[in-house]
Length: 330
Image (tube, rainbow, N blue to C red; front, side):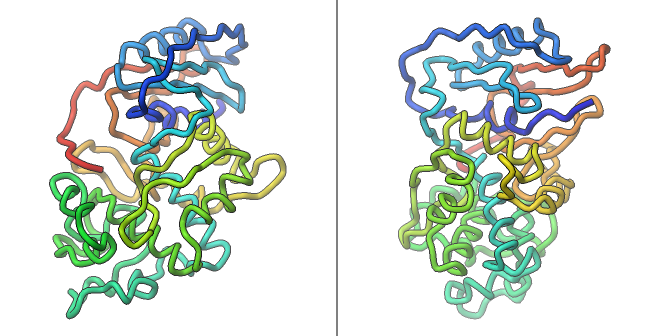
């Protein structure tokens, strides 16, 4: 059986906080679902429409668009919107390209080797051990900048120094501590190591090769583009990004992302203590009825499921989450 593209995981979350636009009637597409039960697919769309924070839904399989919907007054599907923490999956791809290009030396590169000027005086010895992989997998060991600490962090004069000055509550490589400060440090590393801002790298290494728009998004007081939140992409742009992963890093015969990076991104490396979700390099990962799931974001008012049917196809469902956990910041 063929694997579903990761685009659905990203697209359920896309545009959740976008300003509503004029409602557009859903286009009717008599598409062949190739193993997907058409009634179940229609039910998925109907359930998505009942979730008030979902603004768009795209379902793709093997590069074929099976459903493409604006929901609850969502914006046009080509309009870039805030993709929130799905930004972390896109930033992970940028890190993989940077390693392939020699801008970063690898996942074992120590963070102070690039951000040494922002390390606090008399740092905790653990800070010298902090690596790119620790940041990608949310196992930095530093006190989180997310949740209850998010407001203080984004109100600080220097986000990079604030994140690096957090006390260690675990060792690098220890338990998962979901923190957007980790991915912001990756954005800072990309900027310092390349001499170019993260948006310029994103434009040249991902957006233009994919033929999508990624406009400039918010930056910290030092001009570092926010790493892991507030990135702007359209639902169709996210679908194109999902296709990049489905096709092993190549689109239209052009190598954009190393295949090995995709292979290294999806093995589970830690587990969220809040959701129980497994996490790789900027992706939540797991299985449903024996089929792999790759999620760019595990915080939403809905979950989706892709699993096998009795006829060998896939069962798609969208439903309200059965439980929630506290969320006070990215």
